Image (cartoon, rainbow, N blue to C red; front, side, top):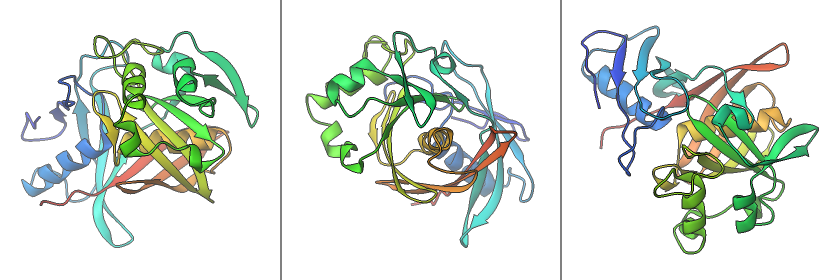
Length: 259
């Protein structure tokens, strides 16, 4: 919902299907940027600041994103600067999780997820403006399918984990958390599946792709630079910027086309 101004910065609201407000949405911000461009409100060159307001109990409001028109592989769209991610249970206010390791990095074992599939034992919590739980898989066959995530008993279990009360259990995150599963496909290329808080199975998600790329970087699956995250609904191009051994910035490229 928006814009509420005629000049930048532009404020907006992003409403989930369940009626809750989202802190950030890569797809939503891309669509909003395209709408601003069509109205002549977005700068044709250079950055424009977008501010998403929300009422979630964790994180800050508004969540700022800098958007800039660009082309990638000849495709017109926008680079979204999502800023610096933070990692670990504290970043998403997760409780009751066990510490495990993968490639020398501390991750989390989320009991409700592993109860659904024993292979889902290494999860990385990421906040990139909104909360994510990325489960890292050595075998791509352990990735859940979107049709599978719509059926019992998996649908009920994932809803309980991802959604906040009263639709979910509030465990491990009382405010809910977006869920992803990720496996390496090739160098700098990760395949992923998404189950969004407030939505359910999602064919493509920009912030989920950003969280997946960030988690993959942290365990050494990808290096800084260009990364691709492959989802059923399409492939998201990303740029990871590293400095002094820290992931400093994540940028997502998005395109919106009027149907």
